[in-house]
Length: 405
Image (cartoon, rainbow, N blue to C red; front, side, top):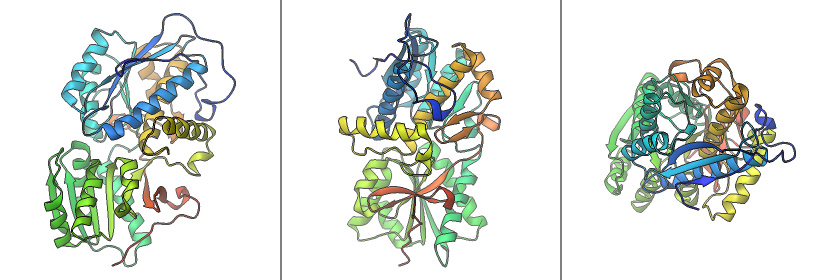
């Protein structure tokens, strides 16, 4: 079976997240398959995270098929490798619509590729559900729907959330900040917002530094950070960038006091001892109260089994897998509710209704079709990601750990 085309057969479930994995196997689907097309970064600098989305999609479509497919028909996922390149993603989505003639679209991984796919979807009036779009004000197309619940202004709401968490845990709270960031669009966008939020809260910015996406030499960046020696580092990093920066800081015997990484590849950061205490954002982690949701608990169980079989470096469900799972939930909910695969009908329904997902109820009635920001703050603690803020979403017994010196 090739990487760029995968087929599975299953049955549609209920709209509620709690019912998506319940019940016995349904009647086997029949007829022509419903073909859902998309790309992922299966190779290139974003592949460590793209492979998480690939496994999640395989699990969802496989489970969907065991429950009877969509509209009684088998479901086929037509998946192509965009190699972490937005321009290639654009070409591949053109192929999916015009040559492969897929019925529905699901977005790729990462903002640049999603924006490329969005342009193609708009040209052909296709609904695009996607899972990791980080710059809401660029989402102009009415028939695109984000599964990542970051709200319409993450450049304001996310920095505020992180600084609130630090203010509650660190006494006295941080007084100086360094903002260092990749020029990758989504993390750069929020990093610039973090500068403004920090300024408004009275933090003294002791360093602002940018690097080109794809950079491999983090030694000079680490040196500048060590020289500035801030109380808190906001790191606009995606994929392996954060882990590479931590390694560079370790080589010069520098350990940051409090440090945040926007979109790290979750497993590699867990494997790095110097990452202990690192903060990031999350919408879901593999612990209560998230796993109190029956659908979430079942997904966590199946993901762990399948990730182990696939020799994945981390077998736990976190933000990336949860966002991908949610995107599939949105597609299923819209098809079941409208009893069709008509793109316009599905889009109209999603605009008018909330969808119960494993990360909460999502709505699409604010700017860019975003709803509320459901972000939380997580931290690496003893080789695990645990949610630490807000307190009501913290892992049992977990609190934000601090390093004061």
